[in-house]
Length: 222
Ligand SMILES: [Zn+2]
Image: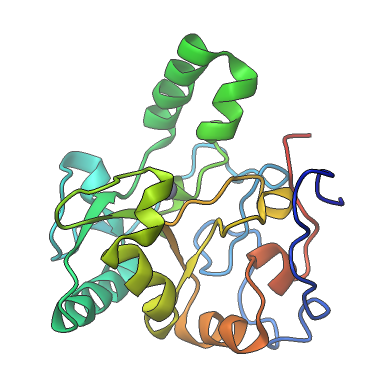
């Protein structure tokens, strides 16, 4: 789908995935290459990872939000430690979110803002990467600009954007790609896919999982 007329067009990207030989499922929620977006709900909708663990990183959350799947937790520990060695303070601001929590979160947005606006801010239940344990949100150690557009300029976001691929992470909702991802820029939301594909995306100049893995854009719910 072309971007809205008022938007600068995203840069052209190389043709989708001649990338890597397909090694992992794009539909299994337990796969690191899962693509969940507004066209691709989780199956089953109430999926819960079997291997949730609490990573040994600085965090501002407790309870289920402090959990990630075990692969993502290990990668997060390595990334946070590397950031710290570079003098960057990064904290985990939101991790796993169960289906039932997503129901409550989404319904709260709908009650406060109406469904159309809620759909720009919160995934519908069964459509959130947070439900898979493969994604989490970061904040700066000082908490500056948490979950706000200005977070993009904070050290933790700048560092993660430049270095996340070395640990298998991508900034899942990059700037100006919402016609493809369905979400406006979220410099705080990182998604694990593995070091090899994340690095390959950087080398190829491909910014979205939809383009890299050759599935269609998902600007809104069907
Ligand atoms: Zn997020």
